[in-house]
Image 1 (cartoon, rainbow, N blue to C red):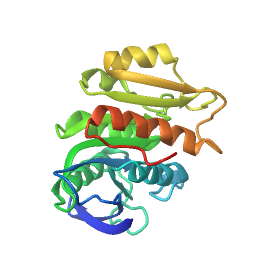
Image 2: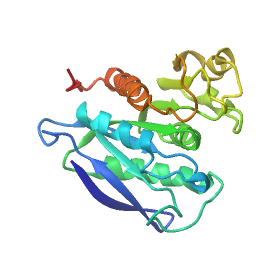
Image 3: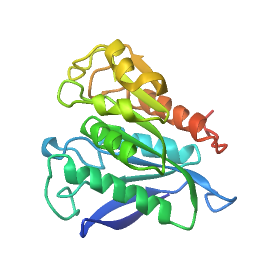
Amino acid sequence: MEKRISFKSDGLTIEGLLHLPANAHEGPGVPGVVVCHPHPLYGGSMYNVVVEALCKSLEASGFVALRFNFRGVGASEGSYDQGVGEVRDAKAALSFLKSISSPKVAKMGIAGYSFGAYVAAHAAVESPDVDALALISPPLALYDFGFLRAIRKPIFIALGDRDEFAGASIEELARIAASQARISLIEGADHFWFGREEEVCYAVTRFFEEVLKLGAQARRS
């Protein structure tokens, strides 16, 4: 089930969609994941195919998933802020997810695709409530991800071996993320995952199922 929601970030109203799994109100708590979309200036929004597919995959596996539009995108107020305000938007989304009472979110992860991976990584470093981080196609050629050396949380990184924005070797990325990172290099996939959305989202969902350790079970055959 999808539910339209809004929350505040720097006084701006941010729009989002909350994905609620079946039987989410049963038990003491469920795991939750915030998902960040690609670059706002290049058509990125919470309706991106990969973002939507990941949220639906998480929902099917018993997670509460929250996707939202960064400031200046869709009905979200404000304007693009060079990644700085967008990190605050992601942190506000995490706070919103933590605040909901029905269902209660007991552990949280954050994921991001492309530019959203850069934003999600910063939010994970700055937010003690984040228990795990997943990065899909982090644009290593465009942004410095060296700050990941400071993180001490489980990290999953999914890259296509034809990603034109990767810009760094897998070995270098592994050194940056240290022992916390698991890296999945998917053969034949590029930055945009055309026709491969379900494959990468399945891998990310399995990671969150394992590391959040709340008994989320896939409801797929």
